[in-house]
Image (cartoon, rainbow, N blue to C red):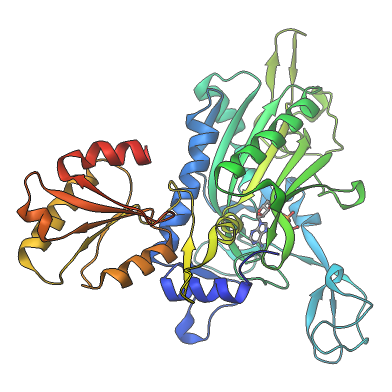
Length: 454
Ligand code: ATP
């Protein structure tokens, strides 16, 4: 069990400004959340860590930022129009609608009635009118995964970068699924963000790369603070595989509501490029693809060794950014007994993920001399590029420490009368986890913080 219940986490997120229900003042929009002042920082930091590991630290990956609005042909030929659906069942008594695989013992999860309809497929894609006239003939979709644009831009990326196999294309962005039962806070929502890598490999090398990416992704999650004992690798049974997959590993995490999928790592074979390519008959495709008379590009690459053109296989590590935020917060949440009957709540986030890196706190509220020193220190720290540095002016140090412990700020700097009177000037640096306080000369702060954060 995790140390925090979902209710506690939801309440912490709202109280401290990580996440809010979308359209809260109108009663909300189901399955849609907004990231608040701290949530946006945490989410951006998680995405930056992913981008750094998947693009900057590698020599074989390019980035992409494609549009959300999607030409319907893309999702027709990808197979999503036909197959991207969940079977669902209606309760005839309370009129509730549920995913068939969420029904236990044939009973309605809402009212307990057993008067349920047979499961029927329900397409999860959001359809939207494009152009000024909404006559039903001109429509597109909000993308249900970021991956498809990577496949349709495959040739443009290869041509503009001269890439050879193996290589990858990475993308982070919003995806939309009209989930039947959004639930468990930001775990299952209708608008969410994905970070996906499509790693293209020579057919026959796919299984090897599938294993490599599984190990790399587990390691990355450990670097984000998750512990291995709270993770599980689930091998999807053949009958449950998505329409494009030959094999899928799910990295599962012990969320407050249970062990569930955090990231999927699928072997999508040549299914997607094979479906989108022009001239399918010219290739030896592994997948059974739909005929495609509409594509204008051959999505293939040269295999010099065997003197042929091939449609590459693809390995796809696909993480849910929102589920990532939920997981790192769950893991970081700690309650410490202070020994005097009181408790301290600390969000022990890895420092690269912390929304605020350093809080500069004046000992005395509204004291001009101290405040001006605080401003000067903050401006100098910003130049280091370590992330957000926040200035407090509440005048209550104890309260400020408690707040920053609870939101995961690794260091608090306190500026007091000694700072401005002493020569050299010094500040108190308090560590979130150990609560140890040390005095550091102001002139040494840049080096001290650079060593600490970078
Ligand atoms: P699930 O089985 O939980 O519905 P999935 O297997 O359909 O997920 P994928 O299509 O593999 O999910 O998408 C990759 C990742 O995107 C998932 O591992 C998850 O982290 C995230 N994701 C998918 N659907 C949602 C959603 N509705 N809300 C939040 N994140 C999601």
